[in-house]
Image 1 (cartoon, rainbow, N blue to C red):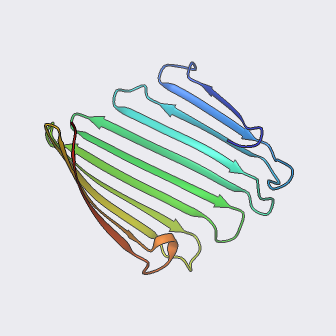
Image 2: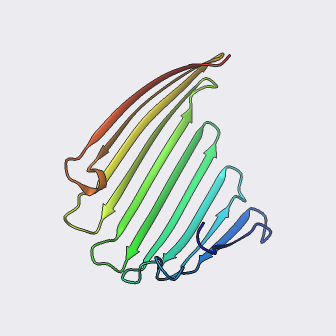
Image 3: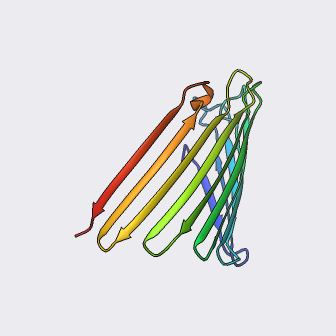
Length: 176
């Protein structure tokens, strides 16, 4: 949302299709230009969701940024897979960023689920290293008890070489 933002959504175009557009005009002081976005979601096939969108950010007159995103998820039986790719194209030299992610989850049983996810930020700026992230998680439910565990790593955070982090989590919850 923003200063005099206009948003329109329409899901009556055809079954399984939802379209959205938005426009935010310049506020005349801190935002020099306007911004516009549009997106479409398709859910016309059971288990499949496809999304695509594009945005133009002209709020800084020295560098328009155009963003394009495509994503899809598909669930079949115990498996769910997802993929997303996006690109930010800037008029500023060496400022483009490409992003790609995938994930897969598997319901081993009604009680146990596992998942694996990965993502990469690729920077046009050669002084930045590509950021890579990986995560694995599991969830086990037994009656009113839920046990969750995960391990996540991120290498080259925000493009800074050797700025790596990893984390673990173990959670046990009871519902009364």
